Image (cartoon, rainbow, N blue to C red; front, side, top):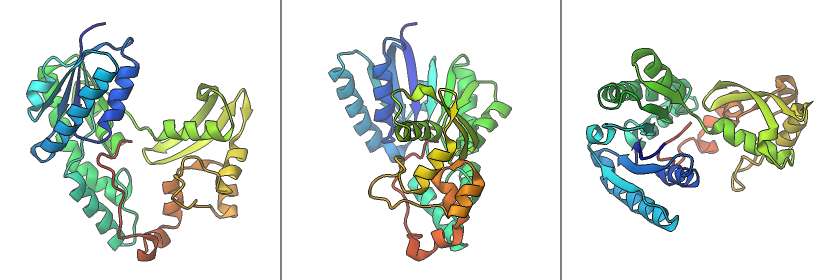
Length: 283
């Protein structure tokens, strides 16, 4: 395998350097020859900044990879080997609108599920299908790696209505596995096996196995006691009511707790008028 061409749709995202770091760490397994960062006119300045950072990261790693920042999607997609989709239809203004409209009706405005997820899907799926159609013409053998939210709905639309090879990704289960590995004080996260159900940011861990032993009750107890390594230190822990935690018998993502207490979470005093500054929103 040599001379891979990687294309990132939404290349001006602040998530792109993390992607580049992964490519650099795995260069000997995936020798990339060129990295094309694609964005729209509104993101022109950002994608140029990210491209500059990418070049510095590559130089520091002692590698030679061409980095191209462009607003021309067709030129970028031509003969690509892998395409990573991480764009946000409507940019942050659309996300703000989704969240505030939801809050107006006492609902959580979330980009992958519920009212916010549905609105996001309506904007995003048509664009995703346009990208898939371009790939059918310009790089029919390429794989599409979809991080664009709502990842589950977008990926299903692509698989149903295009002929390209595609896989949808969300990093939430991976992050949860890392957190649970930390709680269990395991040396290797690969030793922790989880059974996960749900979609995107509304998922549940139904089983946790480490060396054949079930650890779910212990993990739930730790998280409910406020010892959750997934929650940043500047965010107060959200404790489940004891009866709810005991009855669920699974480790829910924080969104589940917010939905359980939806009206309280969406109230102005709970920070309902704000939003997270997340330029892309990956799975």
